[in-house]
Image (cartoon, rainbow, N blue to C red):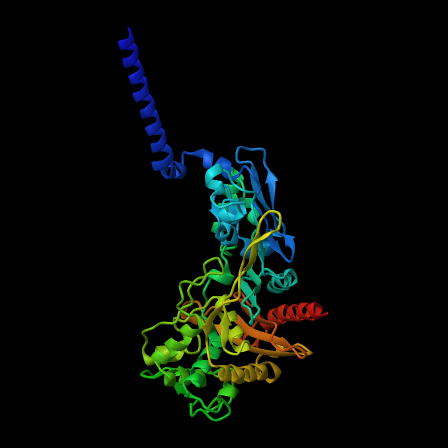
Length: 491
């Protein structure tokens, strides 16, 4: 009898060891694949069992959470959703996350280890912390000024603090309410289908992820390249550029919208936006020189994050001389995001240096303790300080006496550059209206803001667009608000 009991005990021991081995195999070796299995609802249930942390603008949350009473309990809500959608993105139980909701998901959902009271705490307890908060750099009044300025037109506005890289406004229009995508069910699917089918593309973040031909605003980049390369040594001297100007190797004549551009100086060409002068200077700098110059501004960079990814602004590396001439005035295959062109304006304002642009100031625990803060970083030295100072003067003159007079602000030094972007078959579409600028209060030591505005469906004649009629007033409104906030902060 004892022998049989021993055999039964040994068999039970073997079975117990087998169970333990199998449990270890499931928990250790197969845990990740089981977690990622679409049929595993436990992960989704756990993810939405607690409210997400908040995204904060100017000290106030622009997000929230709603108890749906469903299996996936907490749904995301948004305050002034269309205004801040280009900043927050959406957090959807059906379609995932985008923009800050995606880039900072670990903090917002409470899974980031930095939120735990002790190292490895979450791993040991198999738990999670309350969702942390993400504090943005956006200023509410500037965001509202940009949104009002676009007034539902297709376009975008980006405002940046030149000395720090803090993104102060980030608007894409038309926009959408991300709250309609938060939950599950047919209504969410219908909203997704409707917005994706809309010709206005409301979910497209035009500020960060749409590239446009930058038109004449790109002439600031070409001017910087010419000055740094020594092609131009005196901005007020004639450039020996004929008008009419025949594109190299072709019979095609490059037209000017401005008058008196023949042999005009660089100063006059920036003030009145002469195509011929800037195209000629680009050809003189040469392809390799122009490629080096534009890359210093951030063109062709595929790694820019703010923290959301940013579309690459393009400048071709291989071109014929006539293509280079067109590229040097922001045409041909040259394209840029509004953020990129705001960085161009910021480089001029900040003595040639581009500070690393960023949208998240800091992340905190649910109780407000800072867990990580974004420090100032240098992105690129786009041009020499002396070149930047010369371009500051030229951009100021363009606002005071040239094409950018609609951006002038009493009591402030404003530098700007208008632009038009040809598009459509045979360039027959209404040109996009561009304006880039920076503003410095008369009693301030440095510029407060740099801004880029693009309006796709400008309701104006081509002459009005070229003169800053559509985009410059929007830029002025945003810059005025930045100057007001700066003055208020100084007391």
